[in-house]
Image (tube, rainbow, N blue to C red):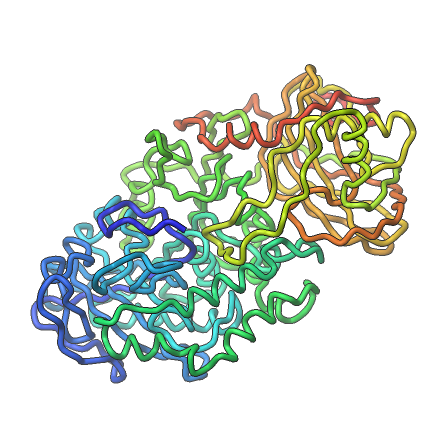
Length: 631
């Protein structure tokens, strides 16, 4: 992993952030209810160390953002477990005594003083620079906000055993929101901000329905913790890697010049090694109905929540994917704002190497600040922002009042078929026999895999595989999968929301479901997929949420078969699986009715198209995407 840039660089952060803010002007006074806070003296010079009663500015420590003053605080979690949480608080530097400010809070595992996921080469301690881009992009302190970063239990300066998205971390979020709202420098209004893991804690914050929490901004979250580790019983490659990654982050060595209280808490795992063992054990539970996972079903827990929510999500994300996203948003009944599109695991303000915005749209920091101003300060926005802006698969941006907007729902008959659950072996053998290049079996990824950083698990799709499988099917052979094709569309239609496939299967093993957009020239883009263990009787599988436009004249192809990619650790049964009565349920809307808005093509869209475009001539049509050719 590359070492992070200096604090003044715009961070493209790792996994989660938690920010608590405290404002101290002049000689600091301890915040109420902080009897356990350290009161050691600061060090002189550029590496001065803050405590609860000794604030430090940028002039005293260059890791402190300009225009702010840094203090450190400790407070208990809310579950009475004895867990002590650490917070780095950044307040506006020239805040008048007695003046109160609203708080932007980030909570997560990546705020350790020595680095986010590994040591970053700092020569002295200081607050994390994880969200320096946000602080600078919004000019946060000049606009009268505090920023607070809280370490989840077991990370950074907090004690306690790791509890990945579970009741323990939920108790930490509750405690942090309450603590931030009750400080002498706080107006009592709290907003949360994060990306990836600290976006997960934002979803948790919304789920907890706390009155002080007035707004939540989440970028590229995990919507349901189970889905990040398993897909309907099939383990993902990170089933062990994610546990290893967070165990590693929890045991990062901290900087010797830090506050003694912080350093003592950071050694927690050395005296409590069972914490790491227990954390690893949870990831090995494959049953989605087990209490371990139902306690972490964030989408279900969102039912009836009302906190104003601003989300971003890449539909073609290769890390924190849009699974259970629609369920979460459907269950949330409060105000919503969203940027949705065809990007990977990036932030709203991130740029790629040539300077283009990774999401393709200007204005992230202005809109985020306006969102907080409206709900934390009661300031009416000067700009009327759309509820949702969405980039579809053509790179075009549109506005809409909610997501998804559905003009028509259809249930399409896919019929019957059979496949050999062999992990793609018969397909690769057929490809080799034809003289075409065959896909290589990938080794397992490395042991470090957190929500911010996912190693590559599969190579670009081999050009001849889908075509070869389809030819074998045409010849009447049972192989690793079978295809079903639609008639060419008579008009453009957009697949949106969460597609579902229902089927009855005879046999045991696995099933992979893929959707392809097939052009008249025989090139096809795989735009959605999901896998599952086969279950007896009728079963229904949700695919990933999507927003993909099928042009007039294109064909929708559905592939049903064995799991053939490196994105899962499947064990093929080697059985022949008989599929009966398969159906595809789609939500559709009409691209002709789009209300266009500003935005450029996100750079990752072209990367995705290169990786997932294959050769696949349309076969015999058995269903119509738009019965009656209307939306």
